[in-house]
Image (cartoon, rainbow, N blue to C red; front, top):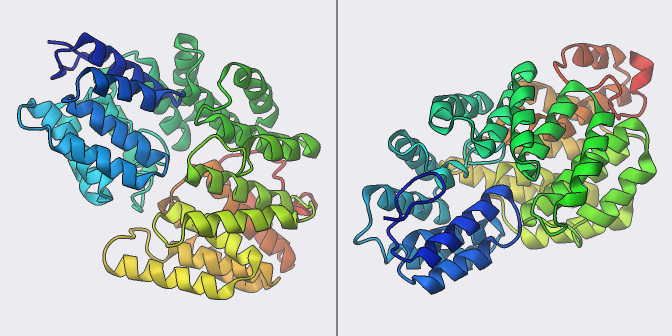
Amino acid sequence: MLTDRYGLLLSTTSSAARDAYVEGCEAKLTMYPGAIESFDRAIAADPGFALAHAARAHTLLERGDAAAARASMAAANSLTASLSAREAGHIAFFRLLVAGDAEGALSALRAHLKTWPRDVMVLATTAFTNGLIGNSGRSGQKRMLLELLETLATSYGDDWWFTAHYGMALSENRQRAAARPKIERSLAQNPKNPWAAHAFAHLCYEEGDASAACAFLTAWLTTYPRNGALYSHLSWHRALGHLETGDTAAALRLFRETFAPDVHSGPPRGKLNDAVSFLWRWELAGHPRDAEAWRVMHDFATGAFPRAGLAFSDMHIALAEAVAGTEAALEARERQIEELAHNGRYASGPLVPAVSRAFAAFERHDFVATINALEPIAGELERIGGSRAQLDLVEFTLLKAYLGANRPQDARRMLSNRPRGSSSIPVAGLAAVH
């Protein structure tokens, strides 16, 4: 029988279908263009190839096309009668994921990987920071992801894709000395792997070396396709480095040319998170508000995400709503979150509403209310999702609120407790409290 790149048997008897499927998986796993087209070729060569339909469904879901994803998943579901146990479990997992049952999918993922640890397409849904575990709303979820990857390490050996994610998980768990050789090994094995480039950018951020991140990404991005799904997010990392080193013109140019919503190469959630985060950090660093950019972001956010759903994105939508001054919309989304939480579908519970109220208070220059909203949840922010670098959006807001409330001693205390990052945090006025 034919196998995939990880040695797992495939039900198709068509070599053309297998080859196209493997190409599509490679593109999907590395965030290169062409995954959908490859899966389409696989399906054309063998319309009964269930895994190709499922992979196509999840790719469409990642791009924000839920209706098309459900249609592809229905095709996969209709083709399960003669599948192996591994493939049947694979389809069952993606059925849950495409249906929006994240909790069920996470439970199924653990059981599936216990039996078939090298089913990489299943693992790929949770191996990165904002995957299934990262969006689970659980306390200690960064540690949970690292523990999962540790249990799978012997199954993957020296695989460059796995090693990049393993290194990133180590970095996110403050094990930077262990992370660096894995990330560098992944880059050496496959210099074109954007997940390794992403992990290296995060490692530089954690080590407080913004210049190294900028230099690396400036060179690396010259060989990555402009329409690669991680191009704009990596450009966001590069812009943060420029903002930190004081090259504000370069940071703003990158925003406008590479990750503003109309030019962003990633899915809708990436367009939202990167742009909102940058615009807010830009202001925290002391630069004037770009009212038109915020208007565009608000229109995009409310149009693309009319209702609450995913905590990490909801946090950024709340920030866009706060800047727009739409208090009624903020309250409506908070009620939606409360309803989801009541029904067991919003595991991070009250954290996003608390951050939402903090952003709104900050906009009113009510810095005491901002502090009161953020201090009680500061130790639980990872439950919202996102990397440590991304969650600094909230920590920097709290630092700025301390300064606004004339509480420099609290800002110093917070800085002294930061286990990562540069001493040149891009928050205006912070240098005076060092």
